[in-house]
Length: 457
Ligand code: PMP
Image 1 (cartoon, rainbow, N blue to C red):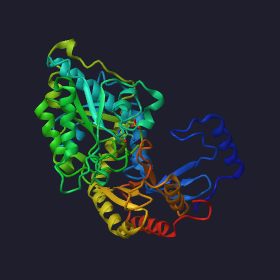
Image 2: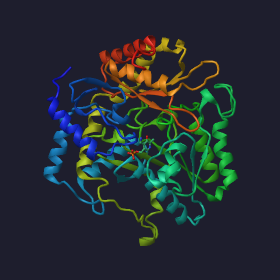
Image 3: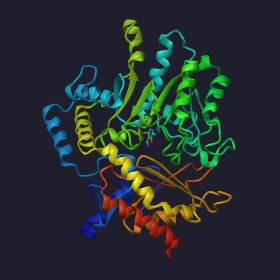
Image 4: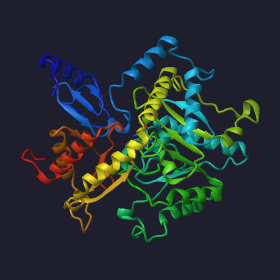
């Protein structure tokens, strides 16, 4: 435990919080945890409690907290040049775009924005304009998956496949349809993993045919559905989607907002499946969230069509902060750390190590399935292993509270309609040490073993 903030000072802060801060996603939160500092895999709250940040914030602090060299890179860039648009160019954006090409292992043009949602909006606009420029303006629709999350803005939320997030904000961007997710544990096609024909991929082709290929611009997928419940597809799924896209002249957009920058155990999640997307979107781990930045990487072949017709083929999209020099300098330092400390391969190691340490959880009556992608782990909770009835909110809350009480923060994901938020998630910093891996695993095992606690957990 660290030194606690003075009680009066904390109360005064909370008073202001209650009066002025609009918290994200949660209903009004009277007594939020006030986080004051972070170091490595740990964060500290105003009461001096330390917690292992088992979700790296929102799946984003890949290099861990408290990296002074990133702070120094940001300060240096602020002193040199705090701002320039990308109507011109600047050194950190040039260097970063080149570095991203190296990481992507392909030739891509990089369009910088501020958030994952922005990066996806840019992808949608570029995809539509690309088809226009090839004389196929009717190709305007996007197909994504139920349970997917692609962002909070009208287009990205349109692509999102979670009803509860959309209900009060519709109508959203139009032209988005959805197919069932590759959810082997609850296969939408009633099949069993390993003995199916990957009908979930075929569903994409069926949807393209139903909509009419001449109306479909692109499909968008995460390599695995993360926020929708760590839904890991069959191994050949993404390659099948690539082939379907090629057959119907449909673009493949891969959303690497969470899976990128090592989370998957490779540099990008699509590398795990050996597939080359037409567009890759990224954010979060790009800067490890030390500063807001996102990017839309567009294949060089596609980019060519944006320079053939003079002003007529310009991509008419600009944003003030996208590719901010300070954020680009932060991203460059962040990637330097990922490379220097071999954090991409460490990510794969962390996942495997955690999985082997929590193997016995599979026998717990509330654990339906444990799924893993690199260092991202999902533990699907059920009330009954046979019926697979999703765990009730109280069961999920009990485990989360039990972990918090022992100093481990974990997440919950899924979809509230028609399912539940019954999948516990973990995505610790890629710098997590062996001792910390043991701490995470031991804590989980103890909490599951203890079951519900006295305080209604
Ligand atoms: N895509 C995916 C896969 C995401 O998980 C998220 C955010 N969790 C987004 C897009 C949107 O990113 P942002 O919150 O930065 O807008």
